[in-house]
Length: 327
Length: 235
Image 1: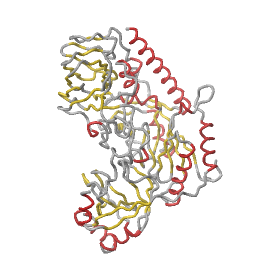
Image 2 (image 1 turned 60 degrees about the horizontal axis):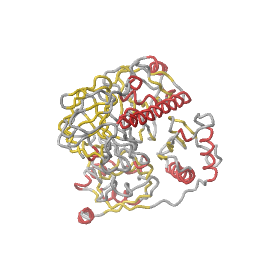
Image 3 (image 1 turned 135 degrees about the vertical axis):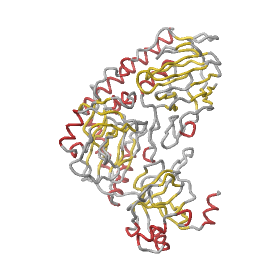
Image 4 (image 1 turned 90 degrees about the vertical axis):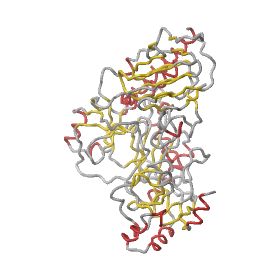
């Protein structure tokens, strides 16, 4: 079973939970930027094994389905038309063979996830079907999809909640994206990094008092923050050490960079902060030009919020499974 | 703190990551202890991922598997597990694996060899002799998959990076950047001085052992001529 890429959209790549255990060889994790949205997309089509989904940035692709398929699109709310029918967001939908799926511009957020029942299939590379655009590792030799690509879908029994047929269908219920998309624009929680105290007084204050704008030079590796330039009391000579997604580092330009899913595995810039992991998916949904505020958090609070988010996500995943079974 | 590792500092970095720091400089001895520490921990705390760097070791773990009875993450339990593992371990290191890397120096394969020679006021032959004379250590891999940062460069060969980096450095290029030497595993942009090229493939994601070099390996370079390079490259 397969899908033809007619138009690729702005930047769409296959992603799963990411590549674990190879950082010591210089291979980063990559993987979905908004992990809860990726997991919920899979759940809505009945995938339970961490299948790869298509991560779409700002403007979506045009895809032709060669066979019947069950899909769901989560994450940033995007206009999705199956032939001429508008599909509801965050909802399980049936597309008959031959359907042309047009994903338009993302109306709210920055990244959407298209999951297909059975998952996007490709040989795992180093244990993952995530695309590492920087290291060129993963599906399609580690690149974004292009027009003319044929994407293979994994074998899977038909979804029992749809009778197959010749028409596009959507379930009458879907998920509410609201709690997952951070419409409230709350500040992002940041822990002090090891070199926070090396910032001068004005910069220490500015980090938690002023707003930054997501720069247009932002990608899956990191978001550059336009706004106040931060300064160290004196230059630091640091030796390279491991870096992580969520690390806020300060290069000599004074413009902080928040590392994201494709963070390099080592780096030598001062680490002025570490984003609470629970807020990483919110950064994934910020667009260039969006304003960002940081508030200070501590490890305990960050862990507590992470645990609560994981628990509510697990409950929701279970409810989706039960509801699909009973539909 | 485990007695055998008096200089170790634990820095919690993130919910799922701690850094164990042994020093703050690029130093052969400190780095050797990083690899000894990684080996000691790996054999006793296998569920943690380890990322060695020059003077520190990153631990990445699942905080949900280190919980107290009330469900909170237990920093104490993880600290005790690390200390227990290190208390049992010796700081002496196992003999590292030694890998020999054939290199065709100079010419088209090492466009900057003459610049390095003139900067260090040595003949090109002397640069090659000094580059092949020592045993290096893979301090860490980073920058790109399989890119080794090698310790042990003869200080006489230290050469600043190029003022403008190349957009594309060929795979296999052996290069000097400041006091370090390394090998580009794939075609990449880069600012180091290119002195030669190896026909060996350093990184193959499809292979059972994807990286030719592992952190902590000992490395020697062996000069080969262009014919030997072509012969090895075609196998």
